[in-house]
Length: 387
Image (cartoon, rainbow, N blue to C red; front, side):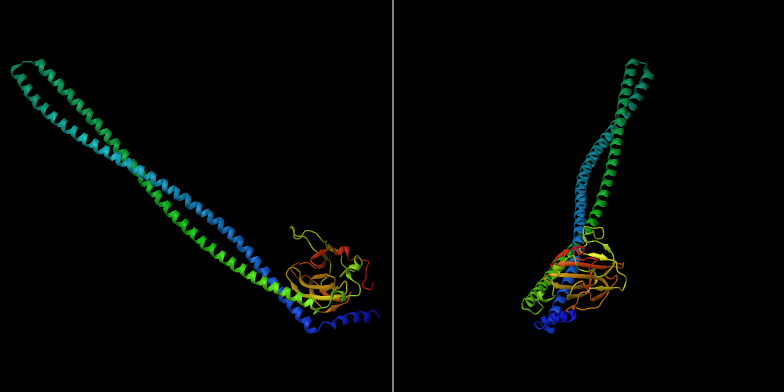
């Protein structure tokens, strides 16, 4: 008897909505889902590229800092090289002056030696011939000897100064060569850094263009999605889909705490538990279910989604009216289709491991609009599908 009654309430609303209209609405919903998946993928790419942009900006900043530091060091080396060259020029002038003094002292000494030699020969000859004024000649020889020693001392001092200046000039020249070599090395390093900085700048520009392109693509897709949402809303308002009030005889809200579970297994993951050790939390439960086991609808309703969804694998969503929905994910196979009516207790899927879970178990969730509800507050192990 109850089957005839249920069939009656399922057939009655169909008089207001043709199969073509329902198919059109489902097609629009599938298109919307496809667009939203594309937007999600683009957003992930965009986030990755923004992270790459951040990294490139950091690298570019470091490159510019390195180039600036080398430019400052290069400038300082230039100042040091200029000062060193001035010192070299000054030492070379002093060396030239000392060399000229040395040459003059050497000429004066040579003249003195010639004069002493000539005078000495004459005086010695005169002394031998007439034996006169010996004391005067002795003083004269002593005077010439003193001048000679003084000249030699001045020459030795001048030679030492000239040698010292030559050594200083040679050392200064070596330092200037070292500084010039260092400056050349820094110029080469700076050129390489500037080339790397330019390459990073080009990569950054490419990433910026790619980000702009993806942002434009996302904006376009979001515009398409908004149009589809508006169309779906319009179709709903025009009565081209079944009114939620006509979906079932007893509203789901009145069966809170009395709904049976879709499978008989124990709860493996509770509502609100941390997800993947992160900040996200489970918006449903995971129930132990053997591979290929029957998954049943917990309440009569209309299937609004029956397809694969990233993270949940093969997923079935049932609309129970008044904004209430139940979700069944990670299935091995789906036994119903979007737009079909299902009764409470009807097998809608076979449990499995799709969606990347890697372990057997059924994802089950209850929602009111966009708000997730705790299934443990709605379902009871004591309830049965015959209630």
